[in-house]
Length: 407
Image (cartoon, rainbow, N blue to C red; front, side, top):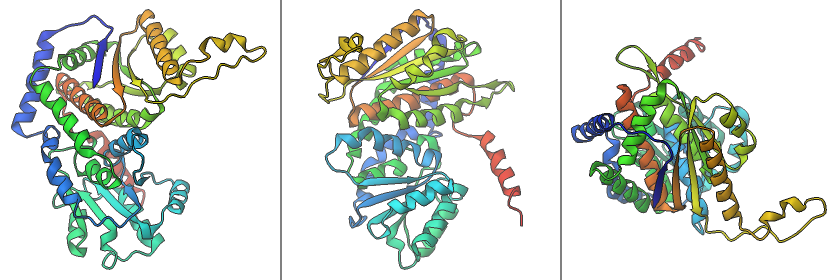
């Protein structure tokens, strides 16, 4: 369902083989669990079926890896369905946004997912407490209004056990930003009406294809990004569809939090992720790409078939005749021509480029896309020789935050 095009000339089989061997070791040892999440899909769906379908909307309370992947899938596929339930995402502690989103929620017709891997995420638990007060919930009487998703034996699981609230576990060996195919994403999306089986099976098939040696382009790109990271410190993801905006945000967390580390030699490594949307950012960032410092690589994502027939009317307006060359064309053709023209201009400017083409936006293609980026991130992390799956740099801010609220 995906096509991969590379517009740079680079190959290093030693690096590619090393990365493949490291990922194979991660998978076979069980140290890294996201590779195995597709094997658990039927178990998750069967448990999700036990939740009474007496709600009209779903509220997801989580931040970062506990919401970004789910939100990206929801945004990408919502228009693919005639009818799915609305999902409201409560993520940030911005009080104005929270108040406005509370006004959207009908507590009598909603089910609330409280998602925190550690079980103590300050944003998530603070919003959870506020929901209890705002809507007058009683955890004993209203226990069926909630579903918790958290690590085994976490404080949030202990709370679930105390009040007999339904809960799902995130496997200990699956980091939050790699958890979209766990209960984090599968259960709320299934209850909303999405075909999560197709999504996750597609991701699983892509994992299998990679470990069978059929996705060498991932290793080639990982080796290239690692080797050229001395001069190309940024990776731009230029996505040509507004529906990919939340995917870009997921990529930024996955890439930044996984690769921005101190390596075994004490060197600071990583690639700064930048998410752009075409054709919008042709008018804001393209000038910097073309004539600014040559310190970036660019990946273009395009959707070949939007399955939409909207056309530009064959109307000629006085003084605007020079725009008539696109009259009668579809917007599908226009945005893809813009992508192609921008990509060609970037290549001609001497920037290293690759491209991912989705035949259409459906469960299979987006499942592959998420799997592709997870594998690519792991491969680059293996070459940098960092722990791709921890985030020690995030912990300092959490420690300092606690000192701000000493009573």
